[in-house]
Amino acid sequence: MGCTLPLPAMVVYEPNYEAGPKSVRHKICLKDKPAFGIAGLWRDWPDGTHSFTMLTVNAEHHSLMNRMHKPGSEKRGVVKLPSEEWDDWLTCRDPEKARTFLRLLPAEYMEAEPAPVPPRKGRDGSSKQVLG
Image (cartoon, rainbow, N blue to C red; front, side, top):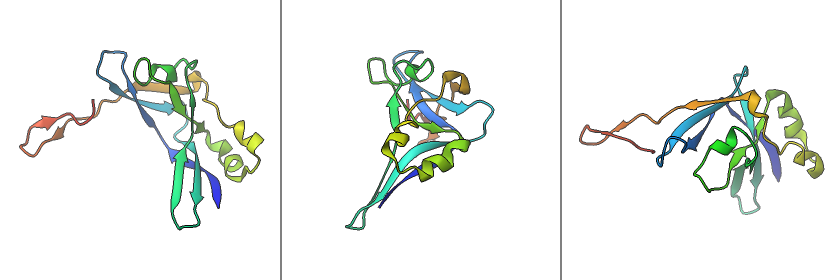
């Protein structure tokens, strides 16, 4: 059996390369809302395994999300569901209605800021950058 689910989140992190060849992690959240859901699909399989995915859509023409990921790579963003849409997503069984959720929220509903990964201490006590 498969089902839709909203994966609760407060932020998502995406790589941004505007400052140079090395990415800077950016924190993206909704303005004036503490949380959102990432549209997901979950399924049990007859052999007892499970699968899960977070849905993404093309962000080439989105003024905020098209700034994320490597230059020349596909621009994409996770489907963010405001909390008032969670019940509708959870109970949706009509494929045509489900497609109406597959969009990016307008850029003016979101904000992004640099959130670099802090250096981690190596075994020798030195600082090492984990993600770049």
